[in-house]
Length: 115
Length: 116
Image (cartoon, rainbow over all chains, first blue to last red; front, side):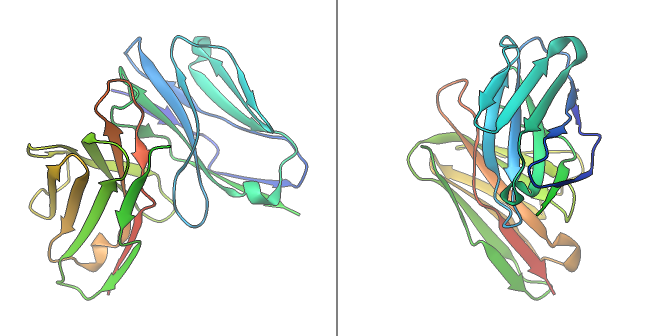
């Protein structure tokens, strides 16, 4: 069975600091997909990234970057120069075999960016 | 991009009321829809998977007679919380995926259900 662990339940930083959110996963499948979602206080899930298990290239999108390491089963998310608008709960998730299969979510990390 | 509409966004009602939540895929056909529940300050937990034209598959511990799911068309799935009680108060989120394999899920904006 698959499992996603986000060890950090809450992180508080001051604006402009860099912050890394950790995600560790477990799966028996060789084909799987990893996701990060942002959930602001309004509740909707905002899709940030999807990565399949065969693509270990790190990705950068503006202030966001992701580090996928199969060797440690980790898919960490870094926000550079954090802003107050980054305050939200961030979820890492996993789906096995097919990107459209059910998602197993991590417990989420609540990020608070203070001005 | 693909859009999933979930309605209503917020419901407040008395204990014993049945509440229906709709999940619509607006610009694609969704063969599969998922229903998740999220309690305050917790993660999303899958409740059930519904496939168009067939019975929903419920996760362990989810009462199918309590949470009725209907996926009558390729663009609409409904979740009915029957005889809701305060412990059913939660945030319910649906997601839908298209007919082509490998497509990711698209999420609705969620329904915040409060039972008094």
